View 1: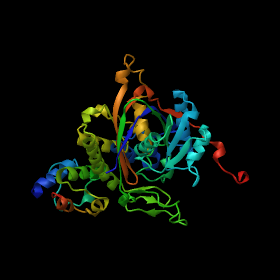
View 2: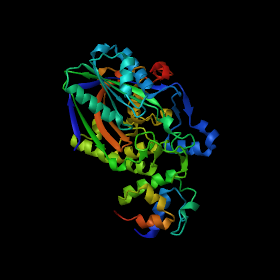
View 3: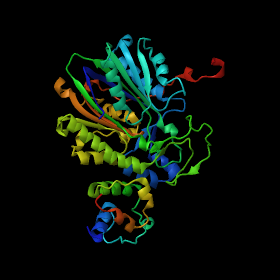
View 4: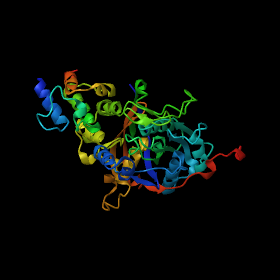
Length: 74
Length: 372
């Protein structure tokens, strides 16, 4: 999966308009990235990549790029 | 592998009660403003819950549910040989509340009484414990009782869970039967994750724990006497370990989801229930939801969901005969511990009674110095 595809998947998961996010986007600037969006992120990572996100991993995410980095098949 | 089998024990009655004190999520807008409660309801599905009065304890709720069950089923108390109480909100540090409930229910001294300290998985664990004890005895009836007042453990400004916990009690009548029925149960636990949901102070590990509040990593202020939940980890557990256990159960029992009429899941939040429906490819209308009106009532959420769904039967379906009243129900409870379990039973839903409200509490239970 290319980075562009990953970003598109992330936008879909977080219910954000297409083309809004870049690798450098700070998550704290994304209004939609709230506690419910994080639950959707956990589900997507489990479904698509078999990655189990922990609370500590999510706390460690600062940019969209940080999330893209773990979007690899476990 | 922790699979258990019990023969010849059936569930022949279920009652649930809530305190007579309904609190809506909307009413929290006075504390948090309008946006937070609205988002909470949108995310969890919880709209209201019932919270115990300050004097009302988990054992009061369990006792009230048991009294209603004994009355509705017209049971002779002297034929009850076992009472298992599941709660994490005891009246005293010791003895267990099971002793208090035995006295209040006037159960005979020949009745064995005990308590199990479990939360959201407690219905499944309690059922298996009670059934196996009964199967190894000559008793006719056993009672599984549950009571919880988790709302008392939450810091009032903890927006992550103050709108989530509802208080409740439940009672289940177990009966020996000549019918050839087998109950298969799966129980699992993972102590590695014991801190995922924890109330650190008040036990014996840190008897002088300070009462000061501090800022937790989720940005919410709590003291060590307030319950803490790592919501992300608990959510991950609920959508991975729990469906895995359900799949393992179906495989072990050589059944598929088509073999069950109803799926009664722990009512943690609606998002989790939706994930279970999706992962197990269930029909939405076979998965009753009660958390909208009662919140997360811990282990009681399975019996309260059944009472909510079937308590008014047969009023809604006068023509139904015995056959259609029998429902095959797959149940799963999961949470604090972490601890989880799966079981399935057949229940005649005419034995499932409506949820009632109670403001009763045990006045003599408050021990004052002149009593000792």
